[in-house]
Length: 494
Image 1 (cartoon, one colour):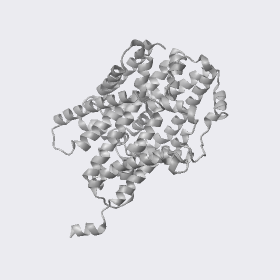
Image 2 (tube, helix red, strand yellow):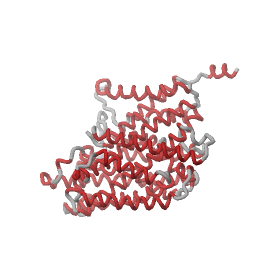
Image 3 (tube, rainbow, N blue to C red):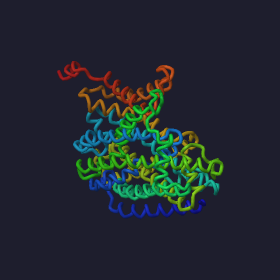
Image 4 (tube, rainbow, N blue to C red):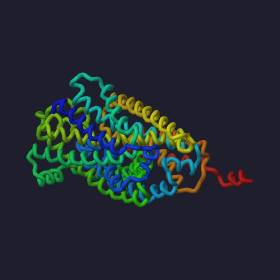
């Protein structure tokens, strides 16, 4: 597949996206930008969230991961399902009862202003890093397979991609994203299914041959039973559960879409239906990973572009763009950008929302609509530049699967949010609000020290994604130590 054909595919798809944006963003207001005027159909939100949850990371990293970790990722996915149940039955009712636009407003009501700002800033840090990693994956493919051939610098490629994201989210916000996510989910799912079909045709596999080959090989191994291993199935399950709770339930981007539904019942129907479909979709990605592995084994030294495979993330693009027919390459690329755009546009919109409402207090202040819009535009542009700088930074450290990095970073940045919400929901204790930022900063630091020395301190134990649970527990414990004793409260009252 030539660089010219890849670029044409990218431009045609982006044009279609802008057309949908134009249809949905007309007469948009600040309320439409932040929560879609609470008129989003739950079925549309549920379907679109599949693409937003998976992103370019899932599209490339999960299939590539099968080479090293087989199907062990499914235990994380089963954990996701239980995490979504917690979100649907515990967090969504809380958010709707309090009528929140930013979910971090809850922290102000529960603890105080310092906790509120701390929670919002940890989200902003988490989402900025996570979204940058997801976007880097796609931009890097554009660079390697298109723009390197024309000697165009990476910074130019990043700038163009970010500019496109700015243009189609600038006005419509969440009102636009609900519908563009639907379009992108459709193309992404089609791309996965068609990619499996094309690769099986190349290696002369029928559907029954593929299923038999997968489940009679080591690739289909789901359970890792060695408790020392980072992929130990119990660790994977509970890590997946808590990853979902924090990266969806405590994440402004994902909850902003749910809060745009008409009412709580609609949002719950959205979450339940979406979570069950997501299990099947993730399994489909693992099947794709196994088929990619069989293809590489069948080709051996005849694999074109083998020198471009620096990490497992590179397996899928190299096979699709360098070895298969042009149609398969087009399908792959449309699937990739379909998976990438939802994570990029949603992140930029939610970061803008959180900063405007939580940090600047835009909703509380009596400011004219015109000034609110100008402020929102400025914040939107600022975050776009920040994301661009992070993407450039990640290019210099691309040494392992992006999804592995993503979950590891989430363990440190989302852990304090897990502790803050858990303490607020499961205890009635009050805390000394001014000390909450200290607890939230110390917890990840202590977590890092423990993780770094775990092999030596805990008889060979290696932390995996359950680092998030440890971080949340440390924050919870820290909050307990800065609680306000009842006697002190009584003295103050007197």
